[in-house]
Amino acid sequence: MGWSKLAILIGEFGFPVIMAMGMGYFIWYVWKVITLQIKPALGKLFASSIKLTDQLRMLDQDMIRLQQKINVVLEYREQERQKVKSGNKENEKRN
Image (tube, rainbow, N blue to C red; front, side):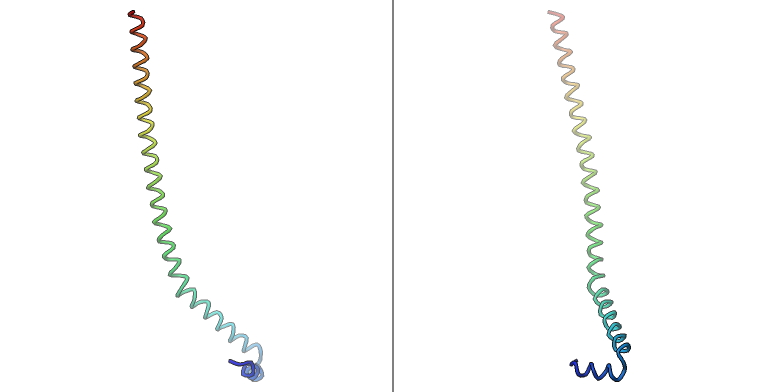
């Protein structure tokens, strides 16, 4: 649309009416972009966010289990050291 046609429309209908139509078009265009492009992208983003959150929880649980296993191994090592120390002390007492 050329500037001359716009000037004719403003002269015929008035500036507020033409601006209201322009605002209506702008609002329709923004609504169309949001519903056709942004909403589907947000849906995909939300699904991937849920998936990543679930993976993070599983990794956290795995880390907790691994830490428990490490603690058990360390306890067994300490018990073995205590047994060796007590066995050495008993041998020294016998000699």
